[in-house]
Image 1 (cartoon, rainbow, N blue to C red):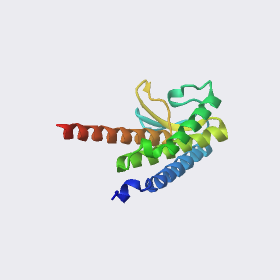
Image 2 (cartoon, one colour; image 1 turned 90 degrees about the horizontal axis):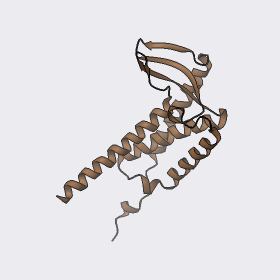
Image 3 (tube, rainbow, N blue to C red; image 1 turned 135 degrees about the vertical axis):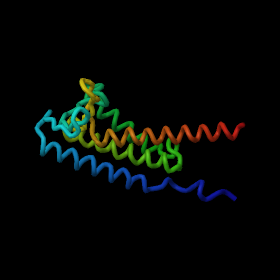
Length: 166
């Protein structure tokens, strides 16, 4: 007799995680657009952290910023493939499901911006002295955190499998 849990569909709660992430991302972006002038910067933690309103037509670190239409198509394709092949890419492990939800929420947040405005709204700026990390947003944070959880889950599973072998 086969295990009924093995054939169960993927949990739906990661879509709640994605929805909350998406809503928070869109609310914060709209607030910064309404309250800040473009490239206006307000110091939050002196010498370390600012809120600075920026636009990014590219991907992370402004990569491919000269090709926003191609970036939009590639982003949509990656998102569609991730949803279609969820069961093949993400195990049922809670870390991977949290990762999936965060990635989906983040990707959707940035896709909405790209589709609607042709750019992504960024506002979080970390810096130390003259070194400044590229400005980013909550969607970027969700994506990076989600990927980190996925990789952590994969690493832990690899270690478990290696220990089981001897």
